[in-house]
Image 1 (tube, helix red, strand yellow):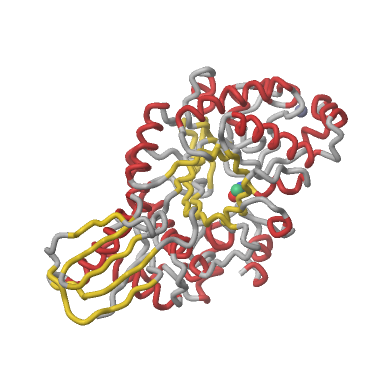
Image 2 (cartoon, rainbow, N blue to C red):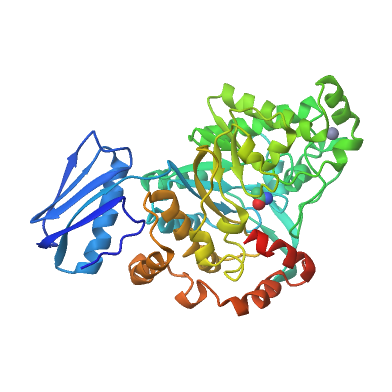
Length: 469
Ligand code: ACM
Ligand code: ZN
């Protein structure tokens, strides 16, 4: 019988005959097997070989999928498997909407089934700051609460808040580790910082008063990189972040930071002159580099969204996460890249815009600089865990397979296997099969209905024009 295994193994050969499912699994350490890889041999007995605990974990997952299909008599087979990319990530935005520790663990459980090994946790944004910082208690007191919710499908005056204590974060980190997953926190800066600026106004150009935002968007209130005091506060915050996230990487955002205020801020303009910077974009490069140097001094590596490449002076040692790179700067740079292209990997947009097939067919070509793939779920329009699962699954699984598997199985076959295994994976809110690839004729209506009044139809059409598909 032909077995369905997701993510698809590197090599799977079928052998004659069957083996009893209740045979004990012989786990054998074997140093030749790559980290996270495994070898599984089923023929009269069951032998699982690996060189790491993660390898045994993944091998047992494969065995469990085989058992779910074969019942008492396992198809004899030999499997050799190891990952294509060392970074296989998913991102959850806990800032726009807050998800409890229990819900975050539920997503970790779901994602561990597909061998994701990085949980990128977007913890701060304009609409809420969600991580306790002990040195500045006002950041949670003010920054974690917003007065009203004016999102597409949610319009009310309710007070909305939530944050994670440092103890809760440690609990999530250790839960992720039990599932062979690292956690990379994102503290977004200099943009997407309204919630921080509301609590610490001195971080803003001119010390302007800012409110925690109540709607989606890109906002002009951003951190002032001209003042030395900004760095002192940000380093203090990052010191606490470093203490609770043991991972080698810290993500510092860098996306969608409009430079309007920097243009008229005397501190920012003085910094540009003094550091001989070309313009405000170069000032963003200077800012990200300063933070990265600090993190390096504390033994950490930095990740920034690809917007920071516009500076022209970003340090090579900073890892770049590609999300929208219309100018192809990720091709030209020499930084290590995490690929998470908006048109393929974002799961907060409807299936009509990003059908499962489009997610599956993502193939970043960046001259060998890709460290891995990631699939983010932003939550401006996602306020509960069931809907999050609907949006992420199965699209997360498509990215997981492409990140793990060296073997590019045709889409049709992947979809059939996924359908066959969907009950086994048992993800409560997972989208039903009929929604995975909506018929072409129905897509424009669904896309326009998703965006509602946010953007004019013309703008939506341009965004999803053929050139972007
Ligand atoms: C992003 O989607 N603004 C990274
Ligand atoms: Zn400034």
